[in-house]
Length: 338
Image 1 (cartoon, one colour):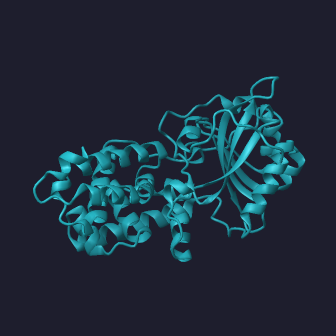
Image 2 (cartoon, helix red, strand yellow):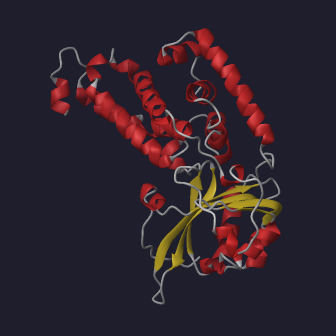
Image 3 (cartoon, one colour):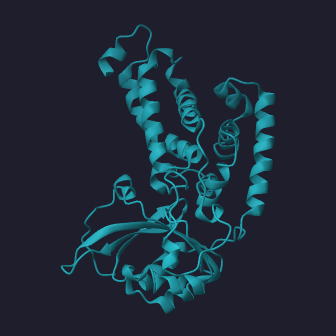
């Protein structure tokens, strides 16, 4: 493919563009993830973006326009993917009441593609840069924020992400979407209003976040590794929320979560866990015991949110074991003592 592209008259040399295409993969993955609410769909969208880019390199007007040109392609890929698709949401947004902490809580299963999927920080967030910009980026991949984005029509979603998250100018977004600056400003105003209304309805409201989340995660994983339910419950806010896609269940209160962990969740005792960073927050991967010979099997990737008081306000366990491959996690880990 590289040789054919290099032979096109007037084309930017492929040897110059090939490494730069790779440089943009992480930020494009983050953009597509916010648009689509799925890490798997984002990976597919970025791959399709790269393919379309290679096929149309002769249309690129100079290497300096590469980034905006790639975003134009990625936006079109995402808009095509979203055409006619139902929005993704969190389990708490798909049911009217919290389920009881009993075996029946595992009866209801959500349809495939219904929930917002997690994203690994190192695959969607930039490395280094201005701390204030990084804080905005982290907030913009938080699960609840990505779920709120899904309420926006696709083009409004693209405008809001480009303007408020990626800090593009209105005329740049207008050029990318082939529309007017006035249309971009109008779309942004409507998107902000919808997002504000949706975030205002979010329960519980976004709390202040504790500073040393790594130390808090270590305490949580220590208690979970020992399966000390009393210690775990002490680390939960009294109104903590727990959900577990693909199950429709969700729980609210540390008491119900504790009861569930010693009931339907009791098979998690003795699990192997590894800390992660997902959606701008602490998280962990979990492998459950799979036999008497000390082996483990992939089980879940769990995202946590800590409040300012150092207690967990939300825990979402994603049971899709394909995430282990997507996040480059081993299928059969060699546990180490914590």
